Image 1 (cartoon, helix red, strand yellow):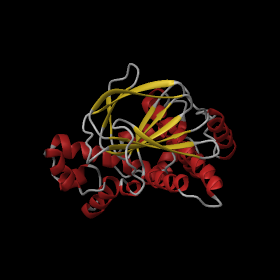
Image 2 (image 1 turned 90 degrees about the horizontal axis):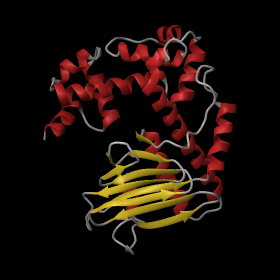
Image 3 (image 1 turned 180 degrees about the vertical axis):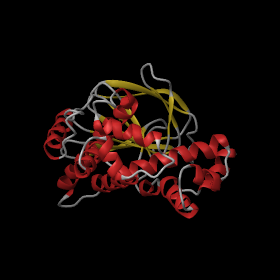
Image 4 (image 1 turned 30 degrees about the horizontal axis):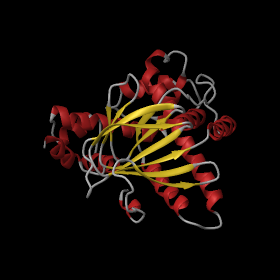
Length: 302
């Protein structure tokens, strides 16, 4: 994704968090480049802010949380009026650490929340969509989020008749991704506590207990106490992906752990995760991670 941003790299005015900004109707898109090692650099915004990492590595210090790495193809959503502090351990003049931000007014986020409740409601067990303005959210991008960030970059930096309309549409899509990810993270963090009263949580619990087996849509809808159509709709509304996509994501995560920590060979991991076809497992793994299982294992061994 970094190549998409190279053409707009300008002569830096400063070496730490050199900022280039582009304004829309009610959103501001910024590109930050850092060219030297730095520590504890503050980032603060009065409004909700989406951050997307493009190149390099940052270490994020946020409140009482344990500091964590922020890497390319990851996202961080910051609540309004809260500061984080950033280390830049690898920034160089020839290889700057680069990220983008999209700052959005809270009223705009709440407007999208209202539309989501009308158009893609959550199940009755989960309640209405809400934006938690007190918590930051850190997540790995899907391919659709990476594509959306590239689209926003081009829309903000180019001048054409439909610019403002397309910016509004695409920032709304970004907000939907933010809220679905926040909802998913919260549900996954606490799903075992809600298995008896939340059908989606019960289905997630079943998935995690049976990742190495064939899992049918019929079984999941039965566990969730919903019709197949209702289960599929509510699951996708809340998670932003289908049950099958979620199962595949979780299988690849578990397979990655086996390859990295248990040092199992690829064939054994494929069988352990319930794949009947080794070639299907390799293709799925590569689609998810960008590398084959064997390449992944060799990289992590270095």
